[in-house]
Length: 421
Image (cartoon, rainbow, N blue to C red; front, side, top):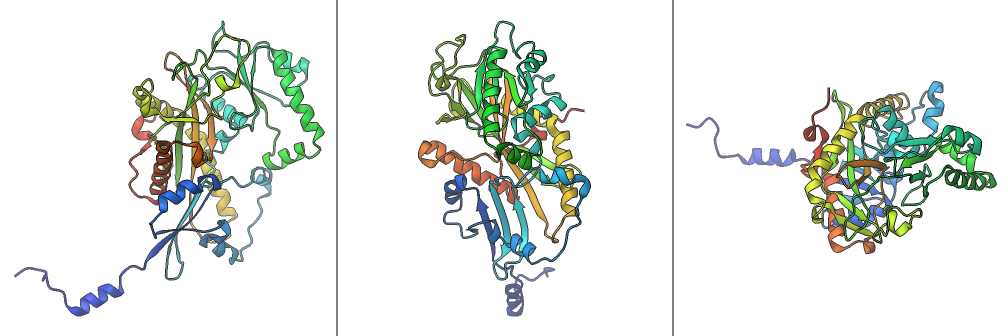
């Protein structure tokens, strides 16, 4: 006689029906540029329900009803005030439908990559983490926003360069984006002229400098960086850069504290025109600026670049392993601050998304140029149908990753390259 009967009594069936888990729902908010992408991810899926704003999320309502006064931390007051809320790409909250009881809150608000977000902070972090010595980024210098001509000349005897025969450098505004605030310079005089023009504009706007100090807690510095040279060219002689998406997921209950993932569907942004002459003293923006380009492809579809994918992922893994001390420090500090200022017992699990911009030389060497934390999505009408499908797939992979579902297109950096001892 079998140990367990295959028959089930009617009373047992009723008991199982009574113990059946209540239906669940996942409320979400998404940053506006990504809304069209997320709509396609969740279409015909009743599990997901969009709410109008963060204020409509269950966690926010719970916190609003919690009457707990946080003890101010005077010692770290400036540090905690210096950065306002970031434009979070995605917030997800799993709840029971019956009573909106919150199971888990997953918010893209981690501070893990704060040291990589602004251009000048990225340079500081790369210098602390020895990325220049590891030849992961072009030689770079930081310049105070209000340097005089004499100070600049004494500080900068020559422009940073990757070759003695190539004197072109790239001057970057610390908070520029989408190709704005990038200037090609061949002389110290050209550097000074751009800086002086922007300084005068800032001084003319009476509130500008105060607003910067209030939001950043510092005056950002200019970045002067060697031009990646000679660049690899594709598509009949066009410059390009690779956009690779990174996700850091906090796991504070583990010894590692976090995991860093690389998405294995890499994007390529191609300049609007072929380069006419890389030795020309001037730089045509359409030839040399790729950040604002609407020519977007997938790396796997470009014959010259597809064989580089494994090497690219190895490069990214090594770069973020080099950044790991800074990332862990920021996550640990943020967690301790949250404990001191906790308004409720809600456990909000955090992650953060970043798009890394990488250029490649003729010899196939990769150089990290920028880390775009919480990047925006392009407008749907500016993308080909294939690229739209890619973005929807990327967002679906992100949702699955943070919800703990299988997401095989994300690679743990420790599985790509062993952590150096």
